[in-house]
Length: 174
Image (cartoon, rainbow, N blue to C red; front, side):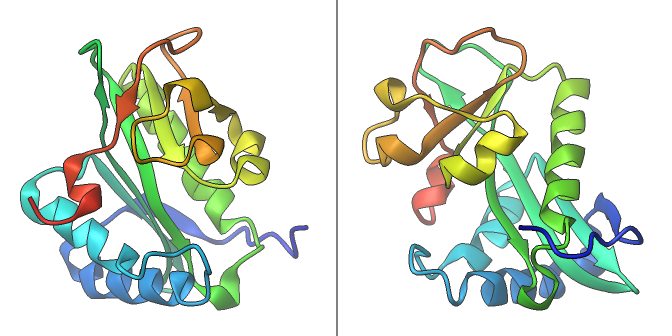
């Protein structure tokens, strides 16, 4: 359940001076998550360095970065264009359950719609992400991804029928 929703949070694209804060907030956000791989804080920098960062949004509260969302290109097996992957998304522990993640997700969805995206994939909690329109597609989950947590947000497609894979950098340095 959400606590008080923060209305004065600014959602904006990252800037160079945000890079260390993005690393720090992502590390803190995932530190207590039992499912975390332990390298989530490295992903935005890895994508940025490779030129594979489609969108990086930050949530700023009182001049401090309290959240970050990453979108990267995703790849459809049928080579259809316009696919993205969401993750990581992080909110500082002290500001969780106040609507910050929701604001970042809604901003990312608006950005993808502006880009006429086909859709967006993620691996995450079906209970949470279904609130934003993501649907489970276990039958077309890429090999190695947990089918029960593989989800797609259809945007430019009515129903995805092809495997959409994450950027290879999700799995380590290329």
